[in-house]
Structures are given as C-alpha cells and as structure tokens.
Length: 232
Image 1 (cartoon, rainbow, N blue to C red):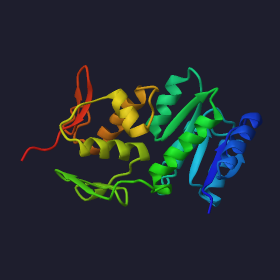
Image 2 (cartoon, helix red, strand yellow; image 1 turned 135 degrees about the horizontal axis):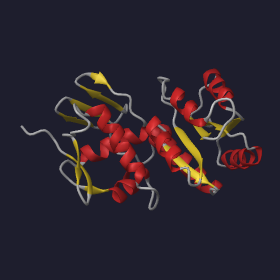
Image 3 (tube, helix red, strand yellow; image 1 turned 30 degrees about the horizontal axis):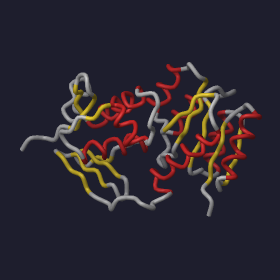
Image 4 (cartoon, rainbow, N blue to C red; image 1 turned 45 degrees about the vertical axis):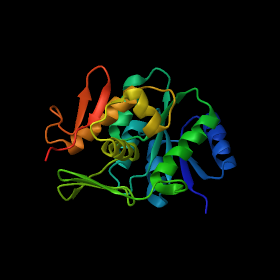
C-alpha cells in the first residue's frame, strides 16, 4: 500500500509540480491550500508525512506545525520556506519540523528528502541496523520501537531529534562537528548547519536537568558536540 503524503501549499503551480513528482515516486498524494484545511485533512485521514509551506492563508505554516506537533502520532513534517526567511525556518525547526527546503527547490530533491524522512520514520526498514537499547543515567532509548524515556517518562521527540540522540549515544565521549552530524544524521553532504544547533537545543530542553548547563550533550568549543555519559 502506498504511503500517503499531504501537500499543503496555496501556490497551485508549485503544488501541482510537487504532487506530480511525489505521485510518480509512488506515493498517494493529497493537496490542500490553507492551514485550516490541512489540520482538517490530517484529522480525517492522518498521512504518513506532510509537506508544509510556511506562507499559507487562514493559518500559517508555523501554527499548523505547532498544532501537528501536539498530536500523539508525530506525523513527520517537511517544510517549504522562501529563500532568506532564516528566522521562520529556525522557528519551524524549533517547533518540530523534521526537514526543510528553501524555495526555489528541485522537486527531485524534495522527493529524496521525503523518502529519507519516511525511511527514518520506519516506512522503509531495509538496511536498518538491528534494534538496540541505549541507556545512561536514567535515559533509555529503544531504537526498535523508537521510544525514549527519561526516568521512566516517555519523551516526545521528533524524528531528527531521536536520530540525533541515538547517534550521539552510540558514540559516547566522541566530539562531532556540526557538518559531520548533518551528514550522518540528516544524510546531507551540504546544508545549513544551524539545523544541527536548533536540534541540539531542543534535545537539551528535553533531556537535561538544566538545559543552560548541559551535562549530557555538551558543547566542544571550536568543534561541535559530544554525548558525555554519566560517570560510575
């Protein structure tokens, strides 16, 4: 059965191109033109992924993203932003978007991003490593069911937050440059490295006792970040 993608964009020309490419790639695609319609469509029939433009009538994309992140199913979101709207792009990532593309973009690249996000969401398990349980000082991450708990309380993590945490915990005490994390977690050989910074900040807010003074995900000045395991 084909995976369902909801395209939310009020520019009919852009939407038609995006839908056509996604359909050609084998996805079942629906399209709506404003934020309110997007929320109603997700409520009626939850898609496997939402392609979400930020500039929308009725409700803008940021508000739609915020409301979608309140749903328990955690539907993946790929944002479409106008080139240069860095503040909105960063805010969208802070609200929980899993990926983004700046307009104008290549429809082929969008299909690749959608495929990558869905694969990480569990839609394409081929080639995935065997499930494992990562544990450190009350933080437990089960990669099979993609569940993370802190002192028994389940954490609400986006796809990228989860993958970033898993990668760092799999390589404790090792410093990674942001460019390395962008390539290993996002699968991008190039891109805006502030994406990594935003996701680290969001992870710290969820797993650190004091996000302003992190003990788990620490900054290595001039390099990047590392996961610091608790000392016995």
